[in-house]
Image (cartoon, rainbow, N blue to C red):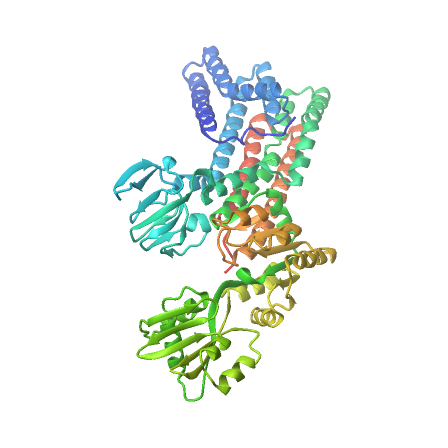
Length: 632
């Protein structure tokens, strides 16, 4: 048997069932109102009023009776049987007005619960609605043809115009544009996209015309996987929910026994009816699922994918957070951290020579140098006679001068003889990657580059310590010790483990767990997969389009914003607190209802109103969680 309140079904069948319930509600209510009208119009003929009362009570009670019969046929035991018995008891006494009013309020409660459950799913189902039904596919002769999005195949070329939604995951092959990816990654700012950059189904094209090559379709797209995993998460249960389910097996027989005792002692059917109505455990049954669905919706809206609601309970108990460095606390992209020109050489001349010679190179070092020149407004020139030796350097003519940029050993091999070059090459530059530059045989100096720390990293660690209350924060990396310590110092992380292989990261996580902490590990989901699996909560960064990240972690962030970490822990704690609040509300209404009914303090109609009040309090208390925001 399974505890249920009949409000956990979704989709077309649920909508049809809700439509039928609305029909019965309005039809029965019309007859019930006519009861009082008939009593006023035909005071000498009470049969008219009684007929209206009986018809209205029957119409209102039919959905409840039908649900109870189906539950019994399926071997379920839940609140519907208690409501049905209460209505039958009122009818057996000939009190059809009471039976009708009780049925009205109970049916209204079911409708409110169904509507609330559907509203909680709106944020999730909107993911699907964002995906367009049609697409502009390009033929071999570059003509557009309108096709169903479901008909797209991997490898198809699709043209996007401003205002279009992306029909499938793909890669930009021509053009540049700006996309709004908020519903997939949770990032509020639009992203600029150019050739070779990935786009996701459901994103909104804001500006340019681009052509994309389809790489994933249907349920394999990022948005499809997010939806399926979120819906799968809703089917999982917290430990407290499983306890409630087991308890409900004995709940209905217990209530029936209490009702029999009350009737035996008082011989008052009104007390029994009130007791059966107020003892319906709808608020308790809704306590956990409404809070969890609200939490899943709030997380999904911010690009946090939770695969099992049990992970929310675990996240609420997190005491230690372990970060991978590269790609997690840092961007994984090089940036210039130092310009070291020789005496008499202007830093802008050094950057001009390096950036101009590297203009056509696709190496990450070249990209970092050129990005700095662009951001500082330094005008560069296109090089000529460019020759690049992979892994060594670039030789090019810049403004009539021969420029060499690359390793010190390569410059020496190219005939650059300089004591300063030898001295700089021999000095300890372990914390940075170095690019040496020479012009017309003269050594100009070197440029230092380093993986860039995410701008929000330091504030996130401070938030975790001071506001969220995480007791232990550590950073692990396979990088060199000096590099690791410089990054840790910049973000105020006092515990650092460097030069760790994947197995070493697992050992560190296990040691923290042995120290008595609940551990969350945050990594990129690829080389960090073993540590993600070893921790109590594994959180993968930037999981949009990353199959390994989604499958290796228990929770996946669809973007690289570290602010989602304290938000996730705070959200999980709020969800846990809401569950406890909801359970207390449900228990208070049940226990208080049994006592008040037994002592004849409430009649059946008031009991039905109080039951509705308890249910509504629980539903709206949980709904507050949907609008939870990140801490400022």
